Image (tube, rainbow, N blue to C red; front, side, top):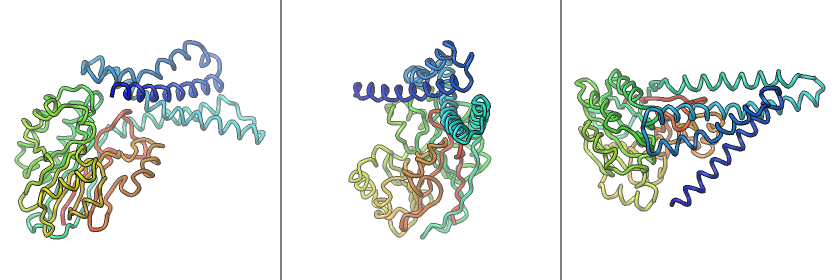
Length: 372
Protein backbone atom coordinates (compact mmCIF):
# COMPACT_ATOMS: atom_id res chain seq x y z
CA UNK A 1 0.00 0.00 0.00
CA UNK A 2 2.75 2.44 0.97
CA UNK A 3 4.78 1.61 -2.14
CA UNK A 4 1.77 2.31 -4.36
CA UNK A 5 1.26 5.64 -2.61
CA UNK A 6 4.91 6.56 -3.18
CA UNK A 7 4.59 5.71 -6.87
CA UNK A 8 1.36 7.71 -7.20
CA UNK A 9 2.79 10.76 -5.43
CA UNK A 10 5.96 10.53 -7.55
CA UNK A 11 3.97 10.47 -10.79
CA UNK A 12 1.81 13.42 -9.73
CA UNK A 13 4.87 15.40 -8.67
CA UNK A 14 6.67 14.65 -11.93
CA UNK A 15 3.68 15.90 -13.94
CA UNK A 16 3.47 19.08 -11.85
CA UNK A 17 7.20 19.70 -12.24
CA UNK A 18 7.06 19.33 -16.03
CA UNK A 19 4.02 21.61 -16.26
CA UNK A 20 5.74 24.28 -14.15
CA UNK A 21 8.93 23.94 -16.20
CA UNK A 22 6.94 24.56 -19.40
CA UNK A 23 5.28 27.65 -17.94
CA UNK A 24 8.65 28.97 -16.76
CA UNK A 25 10.24 28.30 -20.14
CA UNK A 26 7.39 30.21 -21.81
CA UNK A 27 7.67 33.15 -19.41
CA UNK A 28 11.45 33.28 -19.84
CA UNK A 29 11.24 33.16 -23.64
CA UNK A 30 8.41 35.63 -24.16
CA UNK A 31 9.33 38.22 -21.53
CA UNK A 32 13.03 37.60 -20.89
CA UNK A 33 14.90 39.82 -18.44
CA UNK A 34 13.88 39.30 -14.83
CA UNK A 35 11.35 36.63 -15.91
CA UNK A 36 14.27 34.44 -17.00
CA UNK A 37 16.32 34.99 -13.83
CA UNK A 38 17.40 32.36 -11.32
CA UNK A 39 15.09 33.70 -8.56
CA UNK A 40 12.09 33.22 -10.84
CA UNK A 41 13.33 29.77 -11.83
CA UNK A 42 13.69 28.87 -8.15
CA UNK A 43 10.21 30.24 -7.40
CA UNK A 44 8.67 28.01 -10.08
CA UNK A 45 10.59 25.00 -8.74
CA UNK A 46 9.24 25.60 -5.22
CA UNK A 47 5.72 26.24 -6.46
CA UNK A 48 5.83 22.97 -8.40
CA UNK A 49 6.18 20.97 -5.17
CA UNK A 50 3.92 23.15 -2.99
CA UNK A 51 0.62 21.32 -3.52
CA UNK A 52 2.00 17.84 -2.95
CA UNK A 53 3.89 19.04 0.13
CA UNK A 54 0.81 20.80 1.51
CA UNK A 55 -1.36 17.74 0.85
CA UNK A 56 1.03 15.39 2.65
CA UNK A 57 1.33 17.77 5.61
CA UNK A 58 -2.39 18.43 5.69
CA UNK A 59 -3.07 14.73 5.91
CA UNK A 60 -1.91 14.78 9.53
CA UNK A 61 -2.44 18.35 10.70
CA UNK A 62 -5.33 20.83 10.89
CA UNK A 63 -3.24 23.65 12.35
CA UNK A 64 -3.93 27.19 11.03
CA UNK A 65 -0.52 27.52 9.35
CA UNK A 66 -0.96 24.16 7.61
CA UNK A 67 -4.44 25.16 6.44
CA UNK A 68 -3.10 28.49 5.15
CA UNK A 69 -0.23 26.74 3.32
CA UNK A 70 -2.69 24.30 1.77
CA UNK A 71 -5.07 27.10 0.74
CA UNK A 72 -2.33 29.10 -1.00
CA UNK A 73 -0.88 26.06 -2.75
CA UNK A 74 -4.34 24.91 -3.89
CA UNK A 75 -5.19 28.34 -5.29
CA UNK A 76 -1.83 28.44 -7.05
CA UNK A 77 -2.49 25.00 -8.56
CA UNK A 78 -5.69 26.36 -10.11
CA UNK A 79 -3.95 29.43 -11.50
CA UNK A 80 -1.07 27.26 -12.74
CA UNK A 81 -3.49 25.18 -14.81
CA UNK A 82 -4.68 28.36 -16.54
CA UNK A 83 -1.10 29.58 -16.97
CA UNK A 84 -0.30 26.26 -18.63
CA UNK A 85 -3.11 26.88 -21.13
CA UNK A 86 -1.84 30.45 -21.60
CA UNK A 87 1.63 29.08 -22.34
CA UNK A 88 0.30 26.70 -24.98
CA UNK A 89 -1.77 29.50 -26.51
CA UNK A 90 1.25 31.83 -26.53
CA UNK A 91 3.38 29.39 -28.52
CA UNK A 92 0.56 28.67 -30.98
CA UNK A 93 -0.14 32.36 -31.61
CA UNK A 94 3.57 33.10 -31.85
CA UNK A 95 4.02 30.32 -34.41
CA UNK A 96 1.11 31.60 -36.49
CA UNK A 97 2.50 35.13 -36.30
CA UNK A 98 5.89 34.00 -37.57
CA UNK A 99 4.36 31.83 -40.30
CA UNK A 100 2.12 34.66 -41.51
CA UNK A 101 4.82 37.30 -41.21
CA UNK A 102 2.73 39.42 -38.83
CA UNK A 103 5.66 40.35 -36.64
CA UNK A 104 3.73 40.38 -33.37
CA UNK A 105 6.03 40.97 -30.41
CA UNK A 106 6.33 37.88 -28.18
CA UNK A 107 5.86 40.00 -25.03
CA UNK A 108 2.53 41.33 -26.34
CA UNK A 109 1.31 37.81 -27.07
CA UNK A 110 2.21 36.65 -23.58
CA UNK A 111 0.67 39.77 -22.03
CA UNK A 112 -2.71 38.97 -23.54
CA UNK A 113 -2.58 35.22 -22.87
CA UNK A 114 -1.48 35.48 -19.24
CA UNK A 115 -3.83 38.37 -18.51
CA UNK A 116 -6.69 36.18 -19.74
CA UNK A 117 -5.45 33.29 -17.57
CA UNK A 118 -5.25 35.55 -14.51
CA UNK A 119 -8.77 36.86 -15.12
CA UNK A 120 -10.05 33.29 -15.50
CA UNK A 121 -8.40 32.32 -12.21
CA UNK A 122 -9.89 35.25 -10.31
CA UNK A 123 -13.33 34.51 -11.71
CA UNK A 124 -12.87 30.83 -10.83
CA UNK A 125 -12.14 31.65 -7.17
CA UNK A 126 -15.21 33.89 -6.86
CA UNK A 127 -17.45 31.48 -8.77
CA UNK A 128 -16.45 28.52 -6.59
CA UNK A 129 -17.21 30.39 -3.36
CA UNK A 130 -20.80 31.20 -4.36
CA UNK A 131 -23.16 28.19 -4.28
CA UNK A 132 -26.33 28.79 -6.33
CA UNK A 133 -29.75 27.27 -5.82
CA UNK A 134 -30.88 25.13 -8.77
CA UNK A 135 -34.59 24.31 -8.84
CA UNK A 136 -36.00 21.26 -10.60
CA UNK A 137 -39.34 19.45 -10.62
CA UNK A 138 -39.47 15.66 -10.71
CA UNK A 139 -42.55 13.52 -11.31
CA UNK A 140 -42.23 10.07 -9.76
CA UNK A 141 -44.64 7.20 -10.52
CA UNK A 142 -46.62 5.98 -7.50
CA UNK A 143 -45.50 8.92 -5.39
CA UNK A 144 -47.52 9.07 -2.15
CA UNK A 145 -50.16 11.79 -2.31
CA UNK A 146 -48.74 13.58 0.72
CA UNK A 147 -45.39 14.01 -1.09
CA UNK A 148 -46.80 15.92 -4.04
CA UNK A 149 -45.60 19.49 -3.80
CA UNK A 150 -43.05 18.71 -1.13
CA UNK A 151 -39.43 19.75 -1.60
CA UNK A 152 -36.06 18.12 -0.99
CA UNK A 153 -32.71 19.90 -0.89
CA UNK A 154 -29.66 18.08 -2.24
CA UNK A 155 -26.07 18.93 -1.36
CA UNK A 156 -22.97 16.90 -2.15
CA UNK A 157 -19.19 17.14 -2.30
CA UNK A 158 -18.75 19.90 0.26
CA UNK A 159 -15.21 18.55 0.86
CA UNK A 160 -14.93 20.23 4.24
CA UNK A 161 -11.38 20.50 5.49
CA UNK A 162 -8.47 22.85 4.92
CA UNK A 163 -10.14 25.11 2.33
CA UNK A 164 -13.88 24.81 2.89
CA UNK A 165 -14.30 24.76 6.64
CA UNK A 166 -16.60 25.96 9.44
CA UNK A 167 -17.56 29.25 7.80
CA UNK A 168 -18.43 27.52 4.55
CA UNK A 169 -20.63 24.83 6.08
CA UNK A 170 -22.35 27.53 8.13
CA UNK A 171 -23.17 29.42 4.92
CA UNK A 172 -24.51 26.25 3.30
CA UNK A 173 -26.68 25.46 6.33
CA UNK A 174 -28.02 29.03 6.34
CA UNK A 175 -29.01 28.65 2.69
CA UNK A 176 -30.75 25.37 3.50
CA UNK A 177 -32.59 27.04 6.39
CA UNK A 178 -33.77 29.79 4.04
CA UNK A 179 -35.03 27.24 1.47
CA UNK A 180 -37.20 25.53 4.11
CA UNK A 181 -37.28 22.24 2.24
CA UNK A 182 -39.15 19.33 3.79
CA UNK A 183 -36.13 17.02 3.72
CA UNK A 184 -32.39 17.38 3.08
CA UNK A 185 -30.15 14.84 1.33
CA UNK A 186 -26.33 14.86 1.64
CA UNK A 187 -24.91 12.64 -1.10
CA UNK A 188 -21.39 11.99 0.13
CA UNK A 189 -17.91 13.54 0.22
CA UNK A 190 -18.93 15.78 3.06
CA UNK A 191 -15.27 15.85 4.09
CA UNK A 192 -12.09 16.40 2.14
CA UNK A 193 -10.06 13.40 3.24
CA UNK A 194 -7.36 15.05 5.35
CA UNK A 195 -7.23 16.08 8.99
CA UNK A 196 -10.18 18.06 10.33
CA UNK A 197 -12.01 19.30 13.39
CA UNK A 198 -15.04 17.07 12.92
CA UNK A 199 -16.91 18.36 15.96
CA UNK A 200 -16.70 21.94 14.71
CA UNK A 201 -17.56 20.98 11.14
CA UNK A 202 -20.61 18.98 12.21
CA UNK A 203 -21.98 21.53 14.70
CA UNK A 204 -23.77 23.84 12.18
CA UNK A 205 -25.99 20.96 11.04
CA UNK A 206 -27.63 21.01 14.47
CA UNK A 207 -29.35 24.30 13.58
CA UNK A 208 -30.89 22.67 10.51
CA UNK A 209 -31.97 19.55 12.36
CA UNK A 210 -33.57 21.59 15.15
CA UNK A 211 -35.19 24.20 12.89
CA UNK A 212 -39.01 24.17 13.16
CA UNK A 213 -39.66 25.11 9.52
CA UNK A 214 -36.81 23.44 7.62
CA UNK A 215 -35.92 19.77 7.09
CA UNK A 216 -38.91 18.73 9.19
CA UNK A 217 -38.62 15.20 7.76
CA UNK A 218 -34.90 14.94 8.54
CA UNK A 219 -31.40 15.22 7.11
CA UNK A 220 -30.09 12.03 5.47
CA UNK A 221 -26.48 11.27 4.59
CA UNK A 222 -24.36 8.60 2.90
CA UNK A 223 -20.57 8.42 2.62
CA UNK A 224 -18.63 9.14 -0.54
CA UNK A 225 -15.20 8.00 -1.64
CA UNK A 226 -13.38 10.69 0.35
CA UNK A 227 -14.83 9.43 3.62
CA UNK A 228 -12.92 6.21 2.96
CA UNK A 229 -9.75 8.02 4.05
CA UNK A 230 -11.08 8.01 7.62
CA UNK A 231 -12.16 5.50 10.21
CA UNK A 232 -15.89 5.72 10.93
CA UNK A 233 -15.10 6.56 14.55
CA UNK A 234 -13.35 9.76 13.43
CA UNK A 235 -16.12 11.57 11.61
CA UNK A 236 -19.43 9.72 12.14
CA UNK A 237 -20.09 10.32 15.87
CA UNK A 238 -20.17 14.14 15.53
CA UNK A 239 -22.67 13.83 12.65
CA UNK A 240 -24.88 11.53 14.68
CA UNK A 241 -24.73 13.91 17.64
CA UNK A 242 -25.78 16.72 15.30
CA UNK A 243 -28.92 14.73 14.49
CA UNK A 244 -28.09 13.66 10.93
CA UNK A 245 -29.53 10.30 9.84
CA UNK A 246 -26.71 8.16 8.43
CA UNK A 247 -28.10 5.60 5.99
CA UNK A 248 -25.93 2.52 6.43
CA UNK A 249 -26.89 0.58 3.30
CA UNK A 250 -30.50 0.61 4.36
CA UNK A 251 -34.03 1.65 3.51
CA UNK A 252 -36.09 3.89 5.76
CA UNK A 253 -39.73 4.90 5.42
CA UNK A 254 -40.24 8.66 5.48
CA UNK A 255 -43.97 9.36 5.54
CA UNK A 256 -44.65 6.71 2.89
CA UNK A 257 -41.59 7.39 0.70
CA UNK A 258 -38.82 4.79 0.51
CA UNK A 259 -35.50 6.57 1.16
CA UNK A 260 -32.46 4.38 0.45
CA UNK A 261 -28.78 4.99 1.10
CA UNK A 262 -25.77 2.98 -0.05
CA UNK A 263 -22.23 4.07 0.80
CA UNK A 264 -19.83 4.53 -2.11
CA UNK A 265 -17.49 1.71 -1.07
CA UNK A 266 -20.38 -0.75 -1.01
CA UNK A 267 -21.38 -0.05 -4.61
CA UNK A 268 -17.92 -0.64 -6.11
CA UNK A 269 -18.60 -4.33 -6.56
CA UNK A 270 -21.74 -4.83 -8.69
CA UNK A 271 -22.68 -8.15 -7.09
CA UNK A 272 -22.38 -6.70 -3.61
CA UNK A 273 -24.43 -3.67 -4.63
CA UNK A 274 -27.18 -5.82 -6.12
CA UNK A 275 -27.23 -8.00 -3.01
CA UNK A 276 -27.43 -4.91 -0.78
CA UNK A 277 -30.46 -3.55 -2.63
CA UNK A 278 -32.24 -6.91 -2.69
CA UNK A 279 -31.72 -7.27 1.04
CA UNK A 280 -33.79 -4.12 1.57
CA UNK A 281 -36.90 -5.75 0.09
CA UNK A 282 -37.93 -2.68 -1.86
CA UNK A 283 -41.56 -2.24 -2.82
CA UNK A 284 -41.57 -1.72 -6.59
CA UNK A 285 -45.14 -0.44 -6.43
CA UNK A 286 -44.09 2.62 -4.41
CA UNK A 287 -41.75 5.49 -5.22
CA UNK A 288 -38.19 5.40 -3.89
CA UNK A 289 -35.26 7.82 -3.65
CA UNK A 290 -31.71 6.43 -3.62
CA UNK A 291 -28.65 8.26 -2.32
CA UNK A 292 -25.50 6.94 -4.00
CA UNK A 293 -22.46 9.18 -4.22
CA UNK A 294 -21.54 8.53 -7.86
CA UNK A 295 -23.86 8.03 -10.86
CA UNK A 296 -22.80 4.40 -11.21
CA UNK A 297 -24.51 0.98 -11.28
CA UNK A 298 -27.49 2.50 -13.06
CA UNK A 299 -28.56 -0.78 -14.71
CA UNK A 300 -28.71 -2.44 -11.29
CA UNK A 301 -30.57 0.48 -9.72
CA UNK A 302 -33.18 0.35 -12.48
CA UNK A 303 -33.37 -3.43 -12.38
CA UNK A 304 -34.13 -3.36 -8.65
CA UNK A 305 -36.96 -0.87 -9.12
CA UNK A 306 -35.41 2.38 -7.87
CA UNK A 307 -37.41 5.43 -8.98
CA UNK A 308 -34.96 8.29 -8.46
CA UNK A 309 -31.18 8.28 -7.84
CA UNK A 310 -29.35 11.30 -6.38
CA UNK A 311 -25.58 11.50 -6.95
CA UNK A 312 -22.61 13.85 -7.12
CA UNK A 313 -18.91 12.96 -7.39
CA UNK A 314 -18.24 14.20 -10.95
CA UNK A 315 -17.98 17.92 -10.08
CA UNK A 316 -18.69 18.30 -13.80
CA UNK A 317 -14.89 18.36 -14.12
CA UNK A 318 -14.89 21.53 -11.97
CA UNK A 319 -12.35 23.46 -14.08
CA UNK A 320 -11.92 23.85 -17.84
CA UNK A 321 -10.47 21.90 -19.66
CA UNK A 322 -11.15 19.04 -17.22
CA UNK A 323 -14.84 19.73 -17.80
CA UNK A 324 -14.44 18.30 -21.30
CA UNK A 325 -12.85 15.13 -19.94
CA UNK A 326 -15.61 14.69 -17.37
CA UNK A 327 -18.22 14.88 -20.13
CA UNK A 328 -16.42 12.17 -22.07
CA UNK A 329 -16.18 9.92 -19.01
CA UNK A 330 -19.67 10.39 -17.53
CA UNK A 331 -21.50 11.38 -20.73
CA UNK A 332 -25.03 12.59 -20.08
CA UNK A 333 -24.85 11.60 -16.41
CA UNK A 334 -22.07 14.13 -15.84
CA UNK A 335 -24.64 16.63 -14.58
CA UNK A 336 -28.34 17.33 -14.41
CA UNK A 337 -31.58 15.36 -14.56
CA UNK A 338 -31.42 12.35 -16.89
CA UNK A 339 -33.14 9.03 -17.49
CA UNK A 340 -31.85 5.49 -17.59
CA UNK A 341 -34.89 3.53 -18.67
CA UNK A 342 -37.47 3.89 -15.92
CA UNK A 343 -34.87 5.27 -13.51
CA UNK A 344 -34.46 9.04 -13.13
CA UNK A 345 -31.02 10.30 -12.09
CA UNK A 346 -29.89 13.71 -10.93
CA UNK A 347 -26.14 14.32 -10.75
CA UNK A 348 -25.14 17.53 -9.01
CA UNK A 349 -21.99 19.54 -9.70
CA UNK A 350 -21.52 19.53 -5.93
CA UNK A 351 -21.49 22.34 -3.41
CA UNK A 352 -17.78 22.62 -2.65
CA UNK A 353 -14.53 21.96 -4.49
CA UNK A 354 -11.70 19.46 -4.49
CA UNK A 355 -8.08 20.54 -4.98
CA UNK A 356 -8.03 24.06 -6.42
CA UNK A 357 -10.90 26.10 -4.91
CA UNK A 358 -11.83 27.31 -8.38
CA UNK A 359 -14.64 26.60 -10.83
CA UNK A 360 -14.66 27.53 -14.50
CA UNK A 361 -17.32 25.97 -16.71
CA UNK A 362 -19.26 24.63 -13.71
CA UNK A 363 -20.97 26.15 -10.68
CA UNK A 364 -21.33 25.05 -7.05
CA UNK A 365 -24.95 24.24 -6.37
CA UNK A 366 -27.64 23.37 -3.87
CA UNK A 367 -30.45 21.56 -5.66
CA UNK A 368 -34.05 22.16 -4.60
CA UNK A 369 -36.26 19.33 -5.88
CA UNK A 370 -40.04 19.70 -6.01
CA UNK A 371 -41.89 16.38 -6.20
CA UNK A 372 -44.87 16.25 -8.54
